[in-house]
Image 1 (tube, one colour):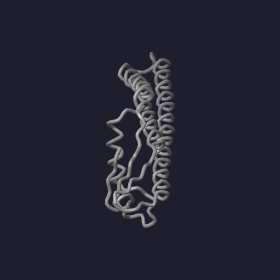
Image 2 (cartoon, helix red, strand yellow):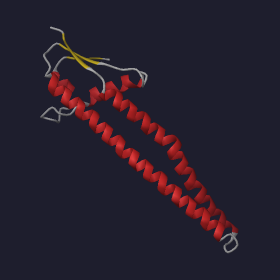
Image 3 (cartoon, one colour):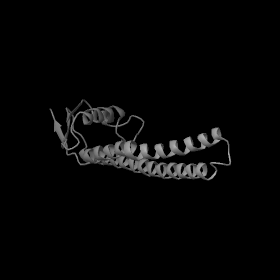
Image 4 (cartoon, one colour):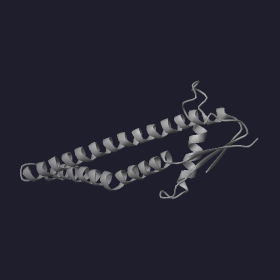
Amino acid sequence: MKVNIKDESELYNSFDKFEETLSEDLISYVNSKEEITSIKEREDIEIISTQKIDEEKFKKAFEKYCDEQLLIIKRKQKINRTKQFWMLVIGIVFIIFSLVLANKINIITLEIVSTIGSFSIWESANSWLIESKVIRYNKKKAIKLKNSELKFINCN
């Protein structure tokens, strides 16, 4: 992947005076290029500039960005697992509640309780089958990005 810049400041967020945060344009560009490459295919990033770039500073900012993305994904995984667990527990409780009270409450209330239980279990399964897979895929992409080799090319 080739990133062409005129000035080193294009690599960093303009609000970060210490230049430790990557620019949104750079992040957006890199992510869009990552979307079209295979998750298994290694992607090197070439920073092409007409001016000298402080390579170490950029590598630190890039690593910080990758670490932050992995932390966000880790938090999403934790939230997703918690959601799966609690939706399953709620579903089981409502199903048991509907079975225990089958002859003691009217049929409409029984159907509502049973439907809530079934829906909760379905939400848990959906989160486990679909959402977890998406989060794992995003984690693989973030790890792939972190393992990318950064190359700096000066075109003077």
